[in-house]
Image (cartoon, rainbow, N blue to C red; front, side):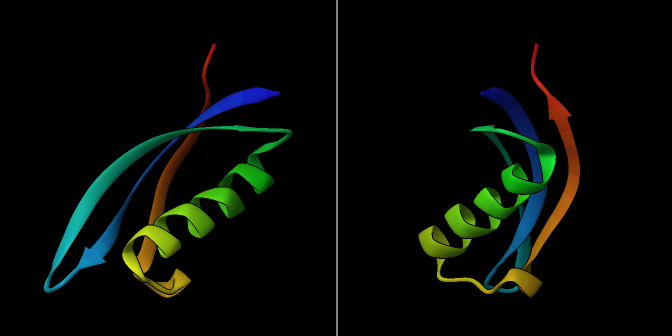
Length: 59
C-alpha cells in the first residue's frame, strides 16, 4: 500500500476548517474516496462540504 497525504478543508459551522490526513491506499482515487468517507462520517458532512486541495504520495 502507498501512503497518501491529502490536504483540504471542510465546512465547520460558518467557517472552513483546514485538514491534512495520511491514508494508505492502492491509488489516488481510492485515497480521495477514503477521505470523503472519513471526514464526512467524523463531522456529519456531505461530500459537497469537503474540498480537496492536494493529494500527494508520501515517500
